[in-house]
Length: 233
Image 1: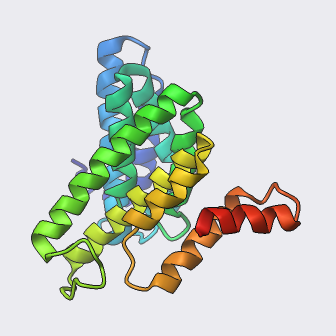
Image 2: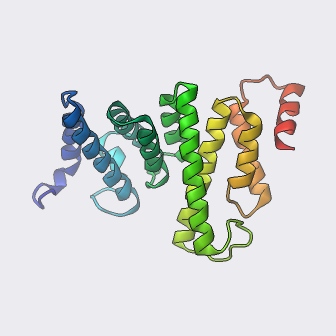
């Protein structure tokens, strides 16, 4: 809690808290508490991106730390102390269940997480976690709104929008992890099956953009066209 007197200085308090938490001695018990508190600070600033909590509508910029950098600091602390599957699940939840500031994309946070998934076993674990979360989110969507087919769902609300966004982000992360494992066929198949979008042309455009980003290292030639056509059709 920050007293009313101290609230105009909130950005300096947050900076100090971050520095102190990151300087905690690497003793397991203290590191656990530090990681939990860093996560709570991150969530608070994320919340402030969507709700006016501080004297700023851009809280990460106000404290001088980008959202991507703050997220990176949090998950690196958690990575040191948590079992692999728990760390990965909580890191994914911090992507899909938090608000973004005006300068950050969900894919920016996905890039940060994938930077820590350096080995195939870590990526396979992340894939299993994504699949589980995706199936759970689709089940909730179907139960609440009658169908996971976006074309058949005519109920629009903040809840349906948030859940649709969650499914889209999980489908995107699943696609990206498949691609990092060089399983392009399954990446595209999974994206087509799970990415929730009412307009087929929009969905195809998004998939083409993702493929273009990930295949940009291939020279502009017939090979690019053949590879893209094979994956899409």
